[in-house]
Amino acid sequence: MAGRVVIFVTRGDESALRLAGACALAAAAMDDRVDLFLFGRAVAAAVEAAGDPEHPAALLHQARAAGRCRLLGCSASAVAEGVDLARAEAALDAVVGWPTVLEWSRGVVDRFYF
Image (cartoon, rainbow, N blue to C red; front, side):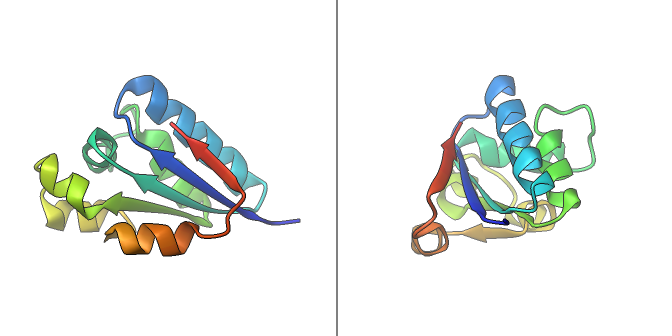
């Protein structure tokens, strides 16, 4: 039975990015809808990884390509990390603020944090 999974990624280190990507891939393979929220350095890492299969955040994009997985960057984090918003909007499904994060994650039981 398909469900919903929310993954919050607040770190940009290789381990956190690979674990989050593996979790997202597994959930997508199980036909779950996955919302992957990126904060802090994770936003910059995901944008940098677009088109680079060797990047530690490449699994995030693979999960997105597998279907039913959205990559969602925090707008405040993008600004704080100096990420070009046009690049972020091209690499991610959306750049969103806290009201959207709260609304889109409301009621989801399966939450994972990296």
